Length: 416
Image (cartoon, rainbow, N blue to C red; front, side, top):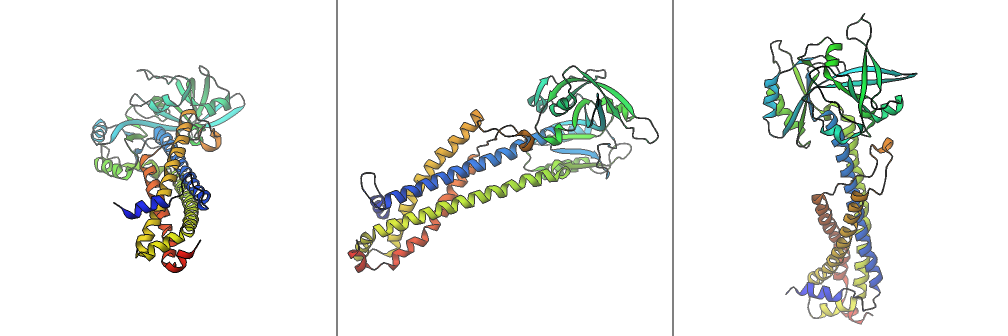
């Protein structure tokens, strides 16, 4: 039998006994419970926020793009030629879920007296509509027949700005790539309206038949802006990029066109740098909560040691070593911490489930890119928080437990 643990359970304040330490110990347990609950909610919100933003960005733009190897960073791209063998080789890679072609071209929409600059993203039959079906709020996502279609999908932001409804048409003006030529116009019909709440997407992009862009740029049917590659996880994008680069090589096709493989993190690094800053906020919250919980536990254990000074004296009188007595009070601290962790898990996880289920706390989409606080419950993260809190707070209790070695047996027995 573990003697130290047995004595520790006897020392703990009980409901039916009046102790000086009882209210202080209760406060310490509450502090740990609330601290862990705050940490669980904070980490779940931050992971949820990062996951939601990342899913939207990757869902719209893909994880990896294959484009022409040039220094052009505008949406007026230099075309690459379709290569079915290249696509099949990429699809054979593990973790690659889908490959689709795309093309982009800037344009200007004018409806009545309102003018709006936009980017037309051209899609073909290889397009996976899953992302836009999820974020479609009105109408429907147009289908791509064998003949050219004028139907487009626009964002709610653009629709509200230009006062466009499903079924209405508008004129878009495009500037030709070649200087000296007159602008060209296209009439589009609103097939559906989407909303991602990401300003970078909603304020600029509309989806249209890729053949419009090919015609406007005087491209052939086999010329596109590039390929979008979707993978199963964004955790190892650099590894996937390397594998795709090995397939792409540097010179392919009859005209030895050069292709560039780039991850979305390389294309728009500022957004991912901003998301990385959220981790710092999480660490600050965790450190503050651990400090508060640890200080409360130190106070509680000091009061228990003070209250049990005479018992410590008796243990020393019968020859109990200081290390064993310290171990007793560390067990006391461990039991109290465990109670706090139990309640902290119950409170924190319950709050997360309530928000996930009912979305009680809304957000301003214009500021936070979503309409409610997102929650993602990560079991590994919660386990790590529990283990980390237990280890760190127990480590902080080593300091007050050292006071036991300074207590004189003779004086302790007389202490009341």
